[in-house]
Length: 99
Image (cartoon, rainbow, N blue to C red; front, side, top):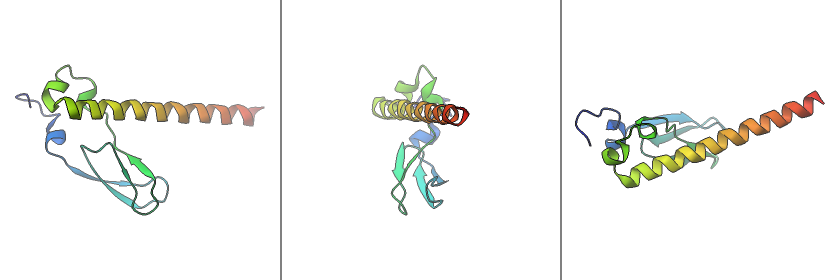
């Protein structure tokens, strides 16, 4: 890790976060380095928030390593695709209701 980079600390030293499964409401444990986990209760895939320094820092690949960098960037692309699909679905539903 580069000297003085505090943003990558949670990636180099994983932290545990408890999230709520949006499908069933169960608690799901996810580490800061995980991009997603399956809910033990219902099997729904819960995604980690990957909005962090890896997305904008020009030294990110050097700092966290190429493997983790690539994993985080792919997770971000997948999360963006999900958000885009949800937005399109909401817009289509709104158009149907307005028609």
